[in-house]
Image (cartoon, rainbow, N blue to C red; front, top):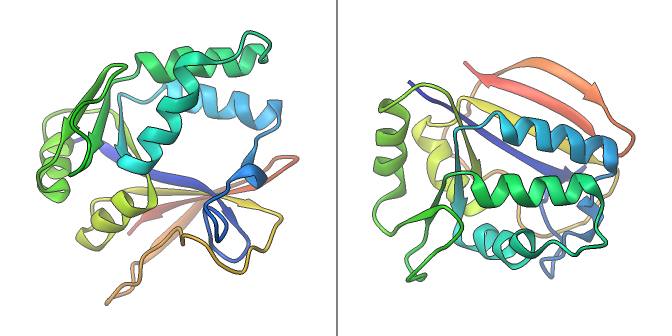
Length: 183
């Protein structure tokens, strides 16, 4: 069965963007960006919600020529990686992507069951639909030194708590990674 990871850079108070949707405070330095490149390279599949897909598709396929080697490398990784985009409003997707408009929970269950390897889920709303169903196997929380006071929370409100086990902490210059496995 495939493993599903949910990870994001998050403010100390738990938000993935600020009140107006900006993520400029999440820009990784070279060390963290290379870590993400290596992590992304090891994934079999990337699951995207509509907002994240649109954000990524607006930038990564056309990385500026003056961008760093690390950024250009990620652009190539992102465009080549098989992506499953969950949206009820998009009518088409590109760059090795498949569009799903049906029930995300059932599709993710099917994707997990039909192979081995590792998938990641990107997009807080998509992850919020999967978390209550116990579909996330690992959480990677990249805590940034900023308090936003509002925005999109990384985690949804839940009716029941989810037990986690801390398996790794790692200090980067710009964030602290907290890696948890679901019990």
